[in-house]
Image 1 (tube, one colour):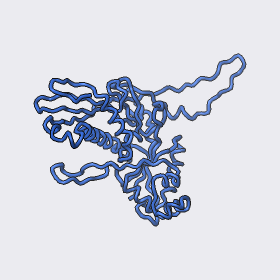
Image 2: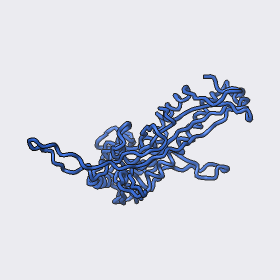
Image 3: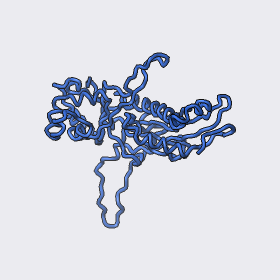
Image 4: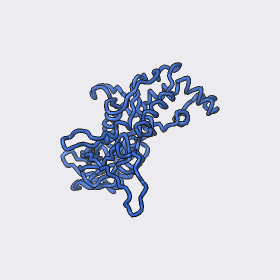
Amino acid sequence: MIPATPGTAGRLRPDLSVLVHETMTGAAAFGFIASRVAPYFPVSAQAADFPVLPAKYAFNAEEVHRAPGAAYKRSGGQFEAGHYSCRERGHEHPLDARFRAIYSSIIDMEAAGLNQCTNIVLRAYEIETAAKLQKPGNFLTGAASAKWSLPDDADPKADIKAAREIGRRKGVFYNTLIIAWPTYNNLCACKKVQDAVYAIFPDARKTGTIDISHLETYLEIRIELAGALVNGSNRAKNPALEDIWSDAVATLACVAAEGSDIVEPSIARTFKWNEGSSEEYVVEDYWDETVRATILRVRHDIDVRLLKSYDDDGNVLSDISKNCGYVFTGIK
């Protein structure tokens, strides 16, 4: 489509939505993992209740035999209700008509502006998700047997194995380890990790390089490596980039499969409304005469929600997410 010109009112840009989708597909490679650890759950209403299956009804040994002439036993458990409320998040980027004319032979200003806008919205989503999924008070918590930053002492596999057993006793299988980039480097430097990986992968010993796939094989768990950065200083000064996800903790998580039912246990879900749109992000543009520019807009309507049910007074009845996460402290 032709970019918005004078007189163009707000309109959807499905052609640019394709570019955003491509960016989202490769987001994890740039350290943006929010949608991978809090998978999307599309909804048809901006706010509503969702069903929560209490753990007390999930593991009972029920009577399944039927006597002649009698009815089968029936489940007596009831779903409880959680609640989500999607809020709109977005950002706009102006494409000045004069600048676009000057640089049109050098750079695709529309694609560059769209990329900037998408990254801003992605970063905000990442910050919100990290704050919730790394907070020890939201989940089960335990200290590592030795700091993962001490290569001679650390035993991350033993720590993960012990935590998984705790989760299993709660009826949860942890399938994902969420770590920040510095923690990944610490794991690669760990002596127990190196000895095991080099024994399994002779080529890794030759190169002295351990990658994510090596760690996943040895630790027997999927790893989500969070590497997205944020400017931690005053924006008027030179940037001081910091990791969005902290390296002071690591989160072992039960993450629901993409597209799974909402009653499947998960550390978190991202409820996505987008006013009924199927895309992860809605892309629009319009012309703003006051600045003589095409305005690109990228937005989404979401709620990053821990899965809990509540009574009529707002008290928590069943905290599903609580047992779906195990936060390791003392790893640094």
